[in-house]
Every structure is written in structure tokens, then in C-alpha cells.
Amino acid sequence: MSNEITVPQPVNYIADEWCDGTTGDVWNIDPNTRTPLHRLVTTPPDDVERALRHAEASYDIGRWDDEARHERAAVLDRVADLLEARTEDVARADALTSGTPISVTRTVAAFLPYRIRSAAQDLRDIPRVTALEAGGRDVRLHKVPWGPAAILTPWNGPSFIPAAKVVSAIAAGCPVILKPSEHAPSSAQVVVECFVAAGLPSGALQLVHGAGDVGAQLTADPRIKIVSFTGGPGAGRAIARAAVEDFKVLQLELGGNNPVIVLDDADLDVTADGILDGMTKLNGQWCEGPGKVLAPPALVGPLVDALTERISKLVVGHSLDEASQVGPISNEPHLRTLQARIEGLRDLGAEIHQPTTLPDLGGFFLSPTVAVGADPAQATAELFGPVVSVHAVGSPQEALRIANANPSGLDAYVFGGDTDRAIEVGSRIVAGEVRVNGAKVADLGDGSAQSFWGPAGIGGHGPAESVRVFCGDRVVGVDSPDLPL
Image (cartoon, rainbow, N blue to C red; front, side, top):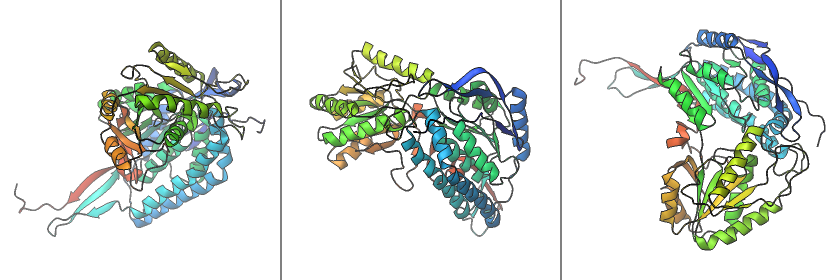
């Protein structure tokens, strides 16, 4: 592990210029040691207004013929090359702000160029104007960028989520104003530096730092035509309320307590390994992670034993330590939230298992936790950390009833030996994606777009994100007196 802790002070990028934000006495803290990393940066209202004016002035439907699309795709390929050269910068910044171990953040950082190049290829492959069948008349479907986009990203995916959303919007042709989480702005800063250095058109991307007040100014402004947000349900509802005033396009990924249904023929090792993988991936700080495990009574004891045995062997340590398998929670407010939710499960009758030895570093460390025996009907709060609750249920039908009574709407899991049966059960869970016998992050298959159901948000994500989310349809064509009405 390198002892050199370097995280540059974040700066804004507004109207094609780098400029300092404002700082006070609040610091961003290293979650491993609680030592200061840099001062928290915010953006004054006048500078946010300047960014909004520039985004509005930069919006132009423009030309999206083959040549124009290839030109912008070439810029994105340069972004990918630049990001490739800064993989370690991104990985270290991610590890120091999200708390995720560097071995994982390196994998994430190495994937960013692939995601950028995928968007560039979509630009080359997907025409923006297609002819429609109209009895010989000239009728065309145009895919048109909605307009200025506000992109607000969370602290748990501090590089990948900004990179993926920004490249989709830029590929679509929307002028972007990015506001990363105030808790983890550093890797988004690196991502934006690479976009700028690649030679984007004026106004294609701006970066403003700050907390909820900056996000609220952006999302309420009528010049913003689309808001893409990943984060908590409270902020998501506030954005949705603000968007109603001028009916902005919304993509809101919010999350919830994702259910896990364990069937009576489930392989115990496959189930325990899958749940452990899901509850510790990104330190459990991912909105699609497993939350409430619903298992037959005969399997609860063996499953809890298998989980606690595995958890006891995990190496919890400094996020820059190559040997660490689980790092600290990203920030103190979220650590307090997790501790309160664990105590809430205890109050509901749960027995709490926290078998991991924690490092003596003074940081925001939490043992991966299994809470067993609470009333599943009341255990509904999103956990969003290395925590699962385990509950005995009498049948798959009861498990489905409990899972759907307070649906996550985002992700769910089924473990079972008969995959046909497991998939049939999974198809009845109110969620946009249901994984059988595993808990990975990557898309289940080519073209597996995921929708957000109910409280999970609005919209979804999947292939050809730029056209699917950041463009609207516009039909232009020759009318006919022969049409029936």
C-alpha cells in the first residue's frame, strides 16, 4: 500500500474554462483514517446560472449524418485513450472516496474506456434519421437530443456512473452539466479532465461541484430538459416534484431493499457465495445489492452458518491495501445510517452477527453483518451496505408476497437448483432485473435493458443508452389527402 495520499482539490469547469469553486471549513474525509483529504467545494448560484446559460446557448439539434456522427465518435475514442492512461488515478480516487478496495476500483477504472468506446460505436452504428413506411411518401423518424441535461451522480460509483451517463448524453448531443456527489467528487474530476482534453465542442460538458442546493438549482431550472440521477429516494422525489413544473424527461435510479428468494432445492454453497458476493461488492454500497433474504425455515440455520463462516474469513482493511477484500463505509453520515438500520433490525427481534475483525485505523469500518429473525414485513428499509437480513418463510408463494408487498423495483435474486422453476419465480417479482444463482453487476445478456419499477425510479438503463434516454422522437414527413381522417 502506498502511503502517499494525494487527492487534488476539485475545481469547476464552466463555459469552457476551469475555475475554482468556493470552500469553507468542511472537509472531505479519508474514510480509512478520518484524516482530511481536501476541502468540500461548492458552486455559487451565479456560477451555476452561468453554466445554465452556456448550456442553453450551446444546444443545437445540429447535423447527425454519418460524417458528423463519426467525428464525434472519434472524440469519444480519444476520451477512452486518455482515460486508459489515467486508470490508476481513477482507481485511487475511487478507493479513497468510496472506501471500495483498490483491487476492485482498478477493475472498474479499467472498464471505463470500454464503456466510452461502446458509446462511440453506437454513434457510428445507429442512424439518427430513418425512413418510415408511408405508401411512397417521404416520412422520416428523427432521433433528436432533448436539450441541456443535468446529470447528478452518487458517491458509491464515483467514476463509472459519471462516465457512463456523461458519454451517453454527449453522444446523443445534449449539452451536459455534471454534478458529482459532494462526498466523492475526485474521480469524476479526472473523467471530466479526459473529456475536455479530447477536444469536445464548446458547451458539450460542464462540471459543477456542490451539495443538494446546487443540484436543486440545476434540476428546477426550465433550461434543463432532461435530468439523469442516481441516488436516494428522498432526493429522487424532490427532483421529480421539480420536474413536474415543465415536464422534464427523467431517468431516476433510486434503489431499495432488494429481495432474495431462496428455494428449498437451492445449493447451499452457491447461495452463500452469491449472497456474500452481493453484500460485500463495493462494500455492499450498490443500489442493486441483496437486502432481505427469504428462505425456507430448514435452510435458515445452515445458510446463516455458511454466511458467518465466510464473513469471518474476510480481510477488512484500508482501501489502498492490496490485500483488503472489504474497505470502510464511504462517509460518516452513511455509517451512522447503517448502524441505525442494524439497530432497527435488532429492535424488530433480529439476532445480529458481525464476525469480522476490524482494523485499528480509526475509519468508518463496519463488519459485514447478518441480521436473523426480524419480522420480514417490517424489515423494509434499504440497507445499502455490507448487511443482509435473513427471514424464515413457509413457501415460495409467501416469499413472493413479502417481496412484492414492499417492492424494491430495481433488482431481486432467486437461488434454486431447478433453474426453470427459479426463473418462473423470478418472473413474478416486482423488479426490473432478477438474477438467478448469482449477484454480479454486469448485464445478464446482450440487450438486457433494465427498467426501474415503482419506488426504484423512472426509466431504466441498458443498450444504446444515448439514443434510448437522451434523444426524443420527432416524425417529419409529407402528409396525404388520402389518409382516412
